[in-house]
Image 1: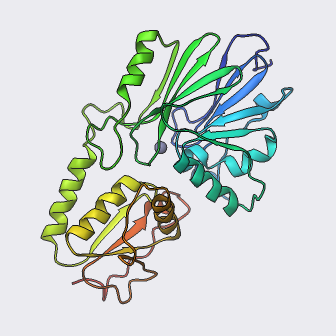
Image 2: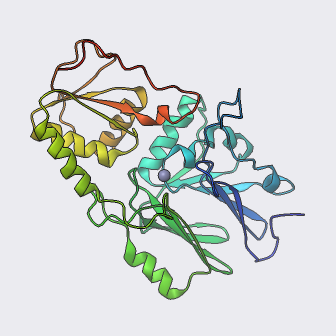
Image 3: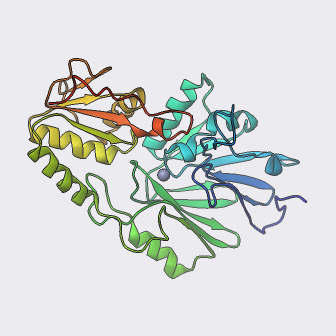
Length: 321
Ligand SMILES: [Zn+2]
């Protein structure tokens, strides 16, 4: 059966990411054309020895069709962009659409995989519309644990599809704008044919706490602790890193970054204006040796998320006090 309709009916084809963490990739097809939303990877499970990375299988949609014309990227987490280096060679005509921070992460990833011939990329801002025939897409700002996340309002011949991206409602994010609830409700009033909404722990009652509250908790720790403070966070959580940077400055501490992805993420965030760190106020630290008592050391937790990457060893002597 051909999954891609030739007429103006619309097929929404999940290729991964439903009921699982990672592998987010969905295809939207109409009039013989295919567009993807995200192209994420997944860490292998324990029953997959010898597998380094899991990627979506595009063969069902690429068979007997002209190819994918565009990929909309909601944000730069691995589970949304991690498969691009592996999938792009099968999509020679594709154009990538994403916000500046997301596309900057994509470029880094492709260059890291020695893909010199980068595909065309169209930078978009929240509130902006683009056409990827036969669809029109508006990018809507959302709050997430990475900068520059967006949801998508996709106008199709059969009505509007609203894809929320990864999001949380945070009334007081630190240094980022809140979720654009007015635009989401505008589409709600107009009428949404299909809502795709996914938020981790959505089954649990209650609300996640605001970044403002997290910063206040961190400040309490900074003010009550005399020695070193070691903080582990996802390298891509620029908002959280900004909170720590501000606290190190307010409390007269020194900032140490550890890990390649943490250093490169901070560099990108500074270049794109998501983070301000005065020159000379942070250092890279390769080992615990010689780390001063009042420093901040950060481990990029992303590396530790893979079952085949054990936690780094934590020396227990000569480091405390
Ligand atoms: Zn995410």
